Amino acid sequence: MEKELRIIISGGGTGGHIFPAVSIANAIIELRPDAKILFVGAEGRMEMQRVPDAGYKIIGLPIAGFDRKHLWKNVAVLMKLVRSQWKARRIIKNFRPQVAVGVGGYASGPTLKTAGMMGVPTLIQEQNSYAGVTNKLLAQKARKICVAYEGMEKFFPADKIIMTGNPVRQNLTKDMPSKDEALRSFHLQSGKKTVLILGGSLGARTINNSLIAGLSVIKANSDVQFIWQTGKFYHSQVMEAIKATEEQPNLFVTDFIKDMAAAYAAADLVISRAGAGSISEFCLLNKPVVLVPSPNVAEDHQTKNALALVNKQAAIYVKDSEAENTLLDIALATVSDDRKLKELSENISKLALPDSARIIAQEVIKLAEESL
Ligand SMILES: CC(=O)N[C@H]1[C@@H](OP(=O)(O)OP(=O)(O)OC[C@H]2O[C@@H](n3ccc(=O)[nH]c3=O)[C@H](O)[C@@H]2O)O[C@H](CO)[C@@H](O)[C@@H]1O
Image (cartoon, rainbow, N blue to C red; front, side):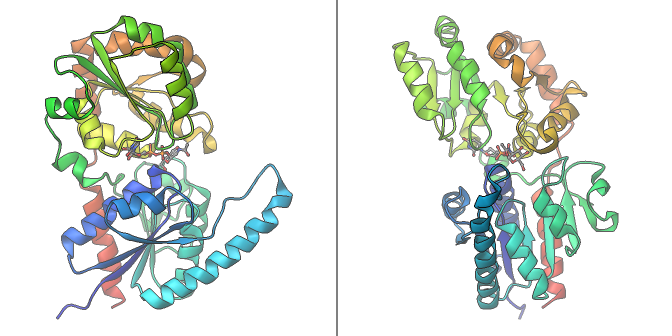
C-alpha cells in the first residue's frame, strides 16, 4: 500500500500568494487523492478566510511584518517571530509532513525555516519577476524553486530553478459559466459591453479614484456596464461617492469577488493592477486588459510584470500617475473597438503557461516520496 503523503503549504498575506497555494493543493489532490494537506498562514490575514473557503484546513502563526518606519515597534515583531517559530515547530512535529511548500508572504518564513531545520525538504514558488525577501532567504535551503519569469538566477541558485509559470485556480479554466449566466449573477444586462475593474486582491486606490472621478461619464455611457471590485479598505468610500450621483444602473460594486470565473466570463475588457497572479489569469483566459501597475511594490515589480505584456502588444499600459486623467477614456474607447479587443486577446493568449499547478504538484510529490 502507498504510504500517506503529508504536505504543508505556507504563506499568504495577499491573494497573490494564497490562490497559487490553493491551486497547487488542488493539483496535488488530483494526482494523489489520499494526500493530507495542511496550510499554515498568518493570524488575522486574508488566508485565514480564503483557504477554508477553498476547503482546506489552516493554522495561523502570530507573525507580523517588520515596520520599516517605526523601528522601535520591531521588538514586538521579533517576539512574534520567535513565537511563530515555536508554533511552526509544534505544527511540524504533530503533522509530520514529508515536504513543506512556501508561496511567499509572512508565514512561509518561519514555517519553511523551521521545516528545513527539522530536516523536512522544502520547495518555494516565486510568483513575480522580482523575488520577495522571504523567498530569497529561504532559497539557500530549498530543494526546488518554481518561478514564472525568465532571469530569476539573479536571485536564486540556477540549479534549483524550474520554470513553471504561476498556478491559477482550476475553476477559472474548467467551470466557466456562459456570459449571459455570468452577467445575470451580477444583476447586469446581456448584450451590453462589460468592463471588469480589479484592484488586485486588496483593491487599488488610484483605480478607484479614477472611476470615482469619472462617475458622470460612466452614467452617460449607459451602453457600457461595469463590475467594480473596490477592495475592502475603499469600499465604503466608493459607495458614498456612488450614492451622491444617485442611480447608477450600469454598475455592480463589491469589495471582493468570490466567483472570479463568473467575473471573467462576463468581461469584454479588464482594468487591473499588474500583480503576477492576475496577469497569469488574463493570459490563460485570453482577456483584453488595461494594466495600471502599482508603484508601491518592491523594486516596482508590477511595472516589470506589465511591460512583459505591453512589449508584445498583449496589454494596454496606463501609468498610475496618469490614470485619473486617461484611464476611463482609454477603457471606453477600447471596449467599443472590437478589432482592438480581438488583437489584445490573441496576443495575450500566446503568453499563457498552462499546467503550472500540475507541474509544481508533481515536483512536490516527488520530493515527498523521496523522504517517505
Ligand atoms: C500590493 C501588493 O503587494 N501586490 C502584490 C500581490 O498582489 P495581489 O494580491 O493583488 O495578487 P495578484 O494580482 O497576483 O492576484 C490577485 C488574485 O486575487 C484574485 N481576486 C482578486 C480580486 C477579487 O475580488 N477576487 C479575487 O479572487 C485574482 O483572481 C487573483 O487570483 O501579490 C502579487 C503576487 O505575488 C504581486 O505581484 C503584487 O505586486
